[in-house]
Every structure is written in structure tokens, then in C-alpha cells.
Image 1: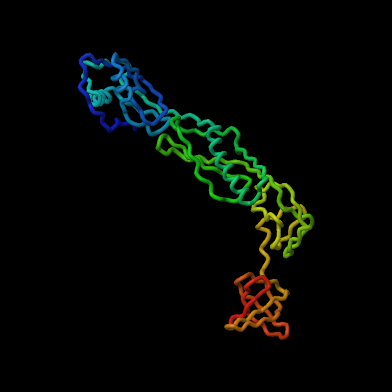
Image 2: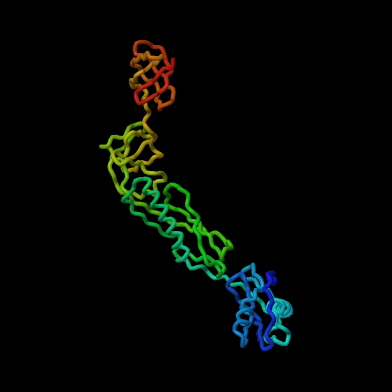
Length: 325
């Protein structure tokens, strides 16, 4: 509901020759929440400074869009006299006895909204492709709705994009845009984009079984849409899949992603490893058979080649386990 502004303007003694003619409108449409007398009335005066002061006289705020509120001449007059310092004989009223005020909604131009959202998304995608070492990636983004138009109060004059989280690439990504009228927050708008990131990534040349390692001659680089993979592509500059093995079967022509592989254990079941026993300055080494896979820091079962006794040892380096005294 519209109320008269509470902040007072210091009154000044009026000049005797000052005269203000006010023609109150029956209906007024405003494009911002704050309403001044000049928004709802036609004003004339021989005194330019007075005219400017009366035109900018604050009457209050229209908080709801597309709903009409009324303000009568009887409410405006005492406020005008108190704030500007005019007498009754210096004010000539005409027009309506009250004004109906409507705050208009207009669609925010889609291109303005898309421009700020798309710029933020492209910056994020550039950071992701750099992190993944996809330096020659070709990025294509487009809004999911070409005719995007958001209904916002016409007074909106600033858009701010929320920083995107460092999420994985996805074929559909969302940007949140905040709309403001001055310093006042209005609403948040989700803007969705279809995303394509084309880059050369390792692809299987033949069917690859689960548990197998990844020799370079069984892989080749092909351009694929990385955003549609559902996981980051597997990549190192010198060897795309060195140090990994498959967690699942990979068909010929399928791209290798980090979700489909795991790092090779430091010791492998069935392989030989060096068992080290350190006791002060004394160090004893012997060969053992590894009975289960293990990463560095994990404990695994091993067996000395000269006996059937099982030993629990900690993996300290690739191919090396140690026994604590």
C-alpha cells in the first residue's frame, strides 16, 4: 500500500510571488517502486527551482506490481505544504480528486539477460577446460529457450551473476542471475544453457576388459563432446592412460573417463615384491609374493617364497612392502 514518505525535507520560507499549479492525474503508470509527485501530476510554475523541488517530492513506494493503489488530493496537500513551505493561496489545484497508481511490469530484454549469463558460463568453461588440459577445446553454448523473456519490474537497472561452482562439465548447465532495482534485490532468475565442449580425448581402439591396463597402442585420440561424457575425460600430456586400469569394460570407440578407471596399485596380487625389515641399523630384504592389491600406506598379505607362512606388511613404495619390528 502506498504511504507518504516519512523522510522530511527542510522547509524554507516561500517567496510571496511563488505559485504552483498542480493538475492531478486520474491514473498514473510508474516504472519504479519510488513514486514522486511529478509522476502523478502535471506541474507548472514560474519558479524553476520550486518546480523541480515539487516534482521530486517523494510520496512513497508502490510495493506490488500490476495492482492499483490510490492517493487523494487531501493526503497530498498537507504533505506538500509541510515539506515545501507553500501556503494555500500559492497552490492551484485542478484535475482529479485522487490518482490511481499502477506499477508496470515489462519484460526484461532476453539478450541483456543472456549476455551476462553467457559471459559467466563461458568464463567458467574456459577454467574447466584449462584444468583438464583441453587447451584446443571448441566450446559451444546456447540458451535452452531462444525466445527467453523474463517479466520483471521495469525499474530493474542491474543484473548480477552468482559465481558458478567448480562443477564438472555437463551437457546442460544453469546460471543464476540476480536482478536489482538500485540496491534493492528483486528476484533470482535461472538461465539454462545447452553446452558442447569438443576436444581430442583417449578413445578405445578395441574392446578393453575390466581390470586390464591401458597400453598406448590400444588407445587413440578422437574429438568427442566432452560435456556429454558425464565424467572428466582421462588425460595426461605424455600418456593419456599411464598408471591406470579399468574398473569396467570399455567398448571400442568409447571414451575413457576418470569414473571408468582407477589408479594402478603400488603392489599387484600375484606379483613379486621386496619385503624390507628395518631394525635399528640392521636392514633385511627378501622377495615375497603379493597376495592382494595394495596402495601405498595400506597393509597387504604377502608370503615368503621359501615358506607358506602369511605375513601382514605395509606398502611403502611401488613393489616394496615393509615389516614393522
